[in-house]
Image (cartoon, rainbow, N blue to C red):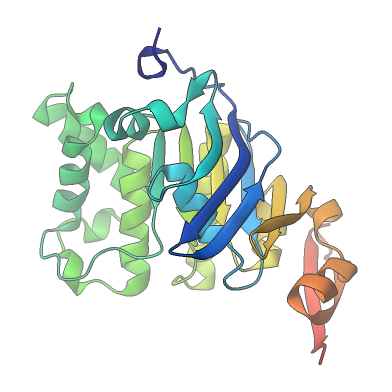
Length: 269
């Protein structure tokens, strides 16, 4: 049986082994391996700017050429067609394309029709599915508005809705909270966590270490295209790591609810 014809179950584990990726002659990721990514948890990729976080996410999504091994369950992702891979893995970029005049509903419906899951559903079923997704994301009120009239934060919520609508095994989210206010950051991360708890593997790039500590069960710290720490928030994020990787003097303290807060005191010159 070929990799493209194998049945991939919801409990399949994503393995990233010895991945390297470059842009031109510049190496971005170098022989990177992660602990197997299991369904049911959120894995946060954190690290300084230009560390390779987004490149790693795009590598897993199959958007850039790599060397190394990517598998989902027993299936080699590199041997899958783009369509077959899209059945199982969906990528949310940092921003949506500009100049789209379609309504939010039409944007999500069009993406859904172009996806593998859209091929086997009637128009009525697709419309009902999109409506339920808009309701879950909390953007029913902007469903009929043109995408090019929305704020950056609203567009980010629409991008998340596109990902959720496809119902993949693995969700890859590149900075889903970057353009959002505090209320919507919490709403999005709560939704992301619930999507994982429903049996999906979720990998999310975050800059906010306190958000990562609150919502992710597994934190991967990347610097210079390599993994420098990985594990629970408590074990991965330490004052020494913050000094070595981020160049700051910082404290790790717990709030009254027992959650980790990262408090930066000063930059290390």
